[in-house]
Length: 358
Image (cartoon, rainbow, N blue to C red; front, side, top):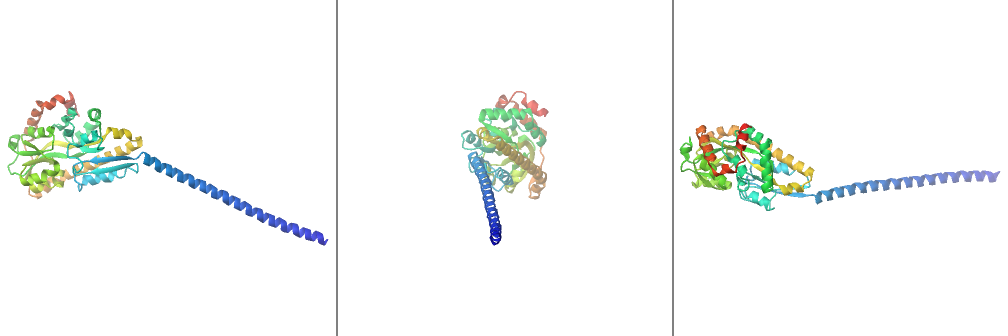
């Protein structure tokens, strides 16, 4: 009897001990398995992150950009803020104020592979793509709405294709920077083309730009944009032609006495990129770059329109004589000069008429 009691007690203790031991083993096993799963999951996540980072690094593209807009200009801030947010696989390096390349030399720098992007004018490419010199004809583009219709039309697509095929440049956007007028350090009013006789009118470097000044009736003088203020101040030039926002931003009004609102050119720059660099991008990278260019175009255009609406009053307050000349007289002379110029031979037949109908 006593033996059976001891045996029963022993059996009961053994079962309890075994159950506790088994439970401990199960918990240990489960914990080990859980930790292993966590480790595998974490390792997988880390591997994915590493692969992702490696993919970014492998496809990372640097975009070197140059323009003549000053560092402290609002347009520079807009550009940098927008393009600095492209993502880790697109590095945007911008140079401003003509510090990397002088005005008009950027297209060749892109062709040589020394530059990726730039803000240029139609006149900067007319030697290689004479068809684009049509856009330099004063009084051809009527206003901002007409400008946007042009680049959204078949005409715009054809001009973009020509630039791509002949120079390896792709137009991403065409920001409106203002309508160009004449600003002078002299006091004689400029009411008609004859009044510009003998006036040293600063024009951007390039033959096509010089002809704009000639067609207007002035004596054109090529000069880089950053040098205009000093040239006006010293009398090296008598006048400059720029949009009103540029006149304010560059403080040309400080060394001027009048502004003749000739409105001869609805000015839009071409925001271009190397076609080779564009082709090297993934579809997603191209999408982001194009979206950024579209935003910059809208921001700069809206800013220019807002400023133009306010600046006439500002310049008058600063003591300048601001007036509207005989616009039909200017338009008639300028178009007649271009019709018989050598530039007309390079235009696409019928394109001027197509632009006029837009």
